[in-house]
Length: 219
Image 1 (cartoon, rainbow, N blue to C red):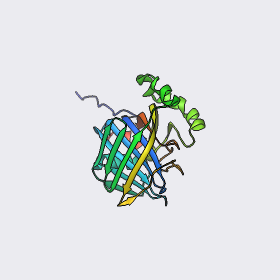
Image 2: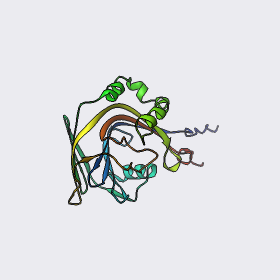
Image 3: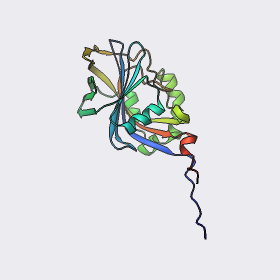
Image 4: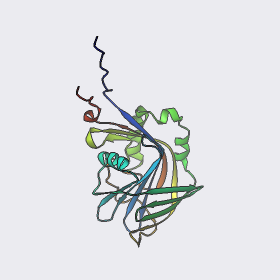
């Protein structure tokens, strides 16, 4: 008697819970930190950096994380290096390859208070992110909460908190990048940028794999 073969699911969604911090510097370099205490790859952090001339770099701690991120977003150079993040109250300290970054957060404003009132179960739903997409585009230029990513993937961002970044110090490849500055022009890693005003967003990110990735293996 033959056994019934089980097909793989037609859609696979991966969920990342953590923080996205975005800041500009007076040198023109813009930096986006992803800090993920919970992810399909275990706890990890990554850094996306765009130079003033437009070169986009990724720093990720493992080949697995680097491959996944590089297949979702756009980079000119990918570095697999240790990415260490320390958070002590309002102070964040980040070390990623030749980047040393420190920043402090301030008190959350009205938008942060509003986001904190959203139940966690709702914030993680793609339908909620879809509902927020138009308000985010109208209120926060360059920000999207849903869109198409690389390799046919879809992505949803569910914000749960927001705090401003008050101070920044950063050194990259031995060069001081200057002090805090708006994220201008917007970063170009994917379908959306981060808010123009530097800040840290508590977020749930959902990534739906593309059709080819979800296709069951041939018998």
